[in-house]
Image (cartoon, rainbow, N blue to C red):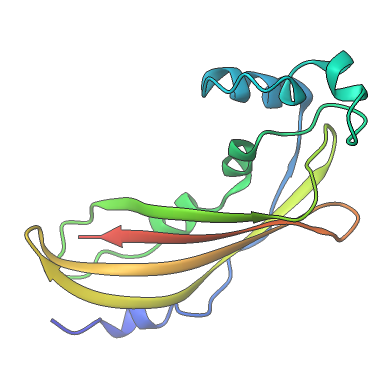
Length: 150
């Protein structure tokens, strides 16, 4: 099964910027929810004594800003596919810490789409990249994602 033209058309397309403020309470709650005990994410007194000078977001917090779900949800399911979408993996590089009240702008784009066949039938493997920029214009992080549609 060949990759339909409407799927090929999303390669290189960027999402609208998703702009979100990093809220301290949400940062603390997320670290607790994923069971990350690092005091840098939740203990202001401890964090003030580190090189960061205060609480910063845990690495898991970057998922709050991702437009990946919106991007994948907006891709029309081609004939022959069930429309199931799953995350195949994420790799993130961090450049600047995310601090409370930072304004983070996330822009995602599809870098490539490949077609494979497996036990589940035909699958489309999307490789995506999301860039997270803070209010100072600094790239806070970049995420490379693999998403699967079958």
